[in-house]
Image (tube, rainbow, N blue to C red; front, side, top):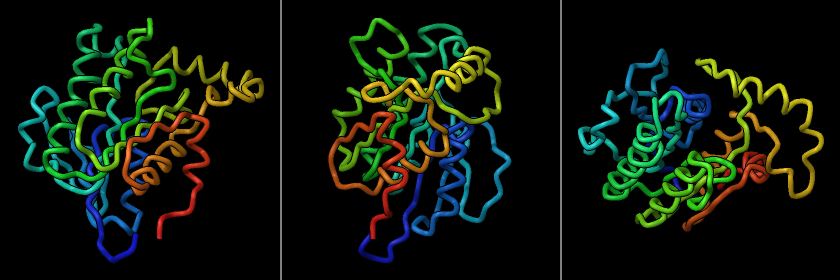
Length: 227
């Protein structure tokens, strides 16, 4: 950054695996003066920079006046099983994310950074990936100077909630990870802390719409900070 302006970061999904890393990293980043977490329930986080705002995911417009800042990090994500059905999953991973995006764009947020998924495609046969692709496309129609979409592969790290299928997948990934080379490299598992750091770096990139596949995230996370 070319001046001494200190920024305000907004985080949705701070209770999740990647969102928790994003929140902690932002609180220790001197470029940010304030870190505002929008949460369903208050989190046990204590830091002078961090404030928390309770909101109803069914009515994000209720906090519209408070979705104001410089960089918004959207780490919202659930599963069909946790949501109860496909409709509930779509309301969270598409409708809620898009509604937040619309409010943030109207309020002049300059960077919107979304965590999506490897394989996201609005034409996918897989409902999860089709929904992720659909919300990516919807966000492209908004007026953010910087829209950055990160598509990690399987996230590594310890969640506060246990997901049996995911934990099994992590064990398998440790065994087969060395086989993912060349074009398959982007399917390697990646630690949530790396994704979080890459998201913050992406927020400072030049204006435009960017999609970072999983194999690019580590390089992005290790890129030098903007001056």
